Amino acid sequence: MPAPSTLIGSATRYIAGRNAVQTVYWKESSKSNQRLLKLSKVCSFGSAASPPQKVKELQQVKFY
Picture 1 (cartoon, rainbow, N blue to C red):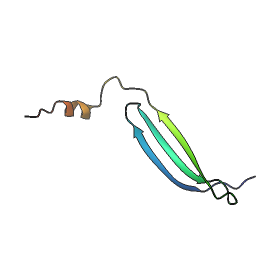
Picture 2: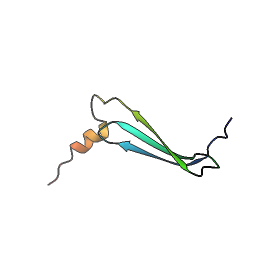
Picture 3: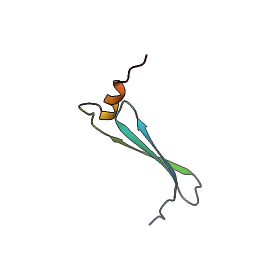
Picture 4: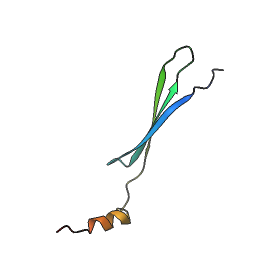
């Protein structure tokens, strides 16, 4: 059984317009190889029927 790889770091971002969140992980591939593996995971959400209340409030702001 191979030894588990060590997590080096991760980053998460919101993808605007796609209603999705992407997380990227960097791990060691193996002790002898000395390389990093980049793994990516995307979680998509369905679109909302209406915008959140905070967005509705911001849309009512008038500039003079």
